[in-house]
Length: 218
Image (tube, rainbow, N blue to C red; front, side):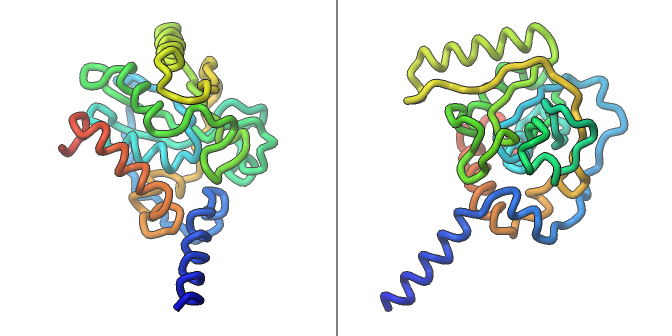
């Protein structure tokens, strides 16, 4: 009985230690996401909060969010691949472009969701995903977003909401490179994979509880 129990613990530990990069080597289903032809009528927010599969799965739930596209920003290499970014040598962060209707949801609301969806006090990592590509970052698209991000961070630090200081980078939005198609709508297409089941799903469920009054489907 003891041996069986220890074996189960070891197997579960393996699941919890799996990282985003490790999971990407597993066979993934192709994305069936239908991207709108024209997103110009929407506003855009760009956030990096660890693995973009987690970020996408959480923000997709919010009313007013039309489309979430995973990609790479903040590095020095043009048109990087996922393999390139995973080396941590390109300088890019895994980010999501979140296209939203400001008449339904505000940028301030999205910032609140950003700080809930990850731990902004972890430097260059989220859980077992370690590297600068997983850094906490807000790429602002105008001075209004910049001011809102800086104000939100200052308020959270002053409130003592976190035991450690927030390390989120706030920078002007650089070139955004859309990630490979199989990364898009990843959780919805691959929810049975270990990383999705043991990492993405708990984050998504917690997010849904916090923002239950702002979800598309209440």
